[in-house]
Length: 409
Image (cartoon, rainbow, N blue to C red; front, side):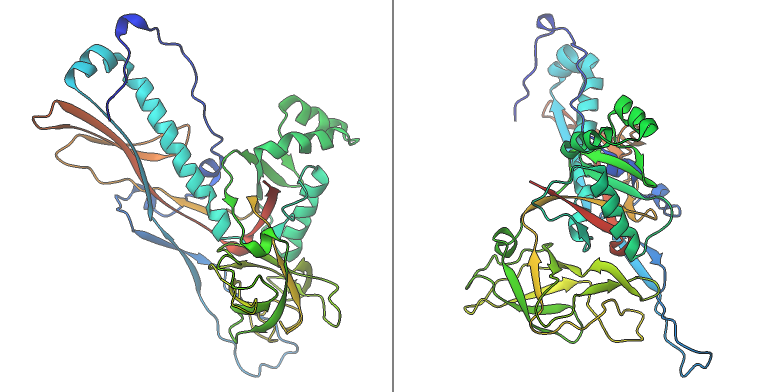
C-alpha cells in the first residue's frame, strides 16, 4: 500500500492530541505473576494460578469419612497477538518523516493499545454467568449500582479491591441520578469531577470499548424456554419452546435466567459460594456453545456453571434440582460491563524475543500499560525501511468473582 505524505513546505505540525480510548481494563488488570513479566515468551506460553479450594461443612463432631479435596487452578495462555506496521523509502524518510517519527510512533502505540484493550475487555463475554440488568431497562442510577453490588456480595465476594466497569454512555445519567439525592459531600465530589468514582466500597471505571454480545433468537424474541431434562453432570439442559429448526436459537455466551413464579415449581436460587446456604441470587447460567433447535423446537444448551443439587458436595450450588417444567429466558443482544473483586481479572504481557539480525527494543508504554516490541529493518535491495510495533498477551477472568452488568444496545 502506497504511503500518502505531505511535502515539507505545505504543512505545519498541528499539535492535535490523539483520539484516545479509555483503557481502564489494561490499567486495572492483575499482572502479578512471579517473574512472568520479565520472561521472554512466545505465543502460546502458559501461566497457571491457584484458586481457593472448595469444601463443605458437616453436622456434628463425628467424621464418617474424610472428604476429598481438589486443588483448583486456572490457566492463562498468551494466545493473542497484534501489530501495527509501516514502511518508508529512503527518500520519504529523509525528506518527509525523519523529524516526524515520534508522531507516527505515538499513533501506532495508541492503535495497538486500543486493540489490546478491546480484547482484554472481551473476556467479560466468556467468563461471566451471573448478571444484573435485563438488556432492555437502562442502568442509569446509583440505586441500580447499589442493587448490583448487593447481588454481587450476597452470593459471596472478596472484601477488597472491588471494581466496576460501566458503559461510558451510561455514566451521565448515573451521575445525574446522584445529584438528585440529598448527599451533599458526595454530590459536590461527583459534580466537580463528573465521574462516578468510589461508591459503596467499589471503584468505578468507564469504558467506550465494552464488548457487545449478539444474542441468539431465543433472547432476541424474548422466548420462554421450558426444561425437558438435564444431564447427570449438570452441564447440559434440554429445553423446549424454541423456534422450529432454528440454527441460531442460542449463541455462545448467551446468558439465561431461570424464572420465578412458575406454577408447581420451586423458585431456583444459588447457594452461597462458601457456606452452601440459600442466597437471594436467581440461578443464571452462560451458554458455552452455539445451539440450534430441532424440528420440535427443542434445543440442547451446554451451560456453565454445572448446576448441582446433591447435598454434601463442595460443588453443590443450587437449592433444588433442575426438573422438567422449570422455565428460563435468555437476554437480548446487549453491551456487557462487569463488577469483579479480588484482582480476578488477569493480564499477562511478557516480552517478545529479539528478532535478530534486526534491531529490536522492548518497552512498556506508560499511558496504556502495554508491553511492546519495536523491530526495525530494511528489505535488501528494495529501498524499503519498515517498522513493526507488536505485542502478545493473555487474559482471563475468574467467573465466580464476577457479575456482569447488562447495558441495552
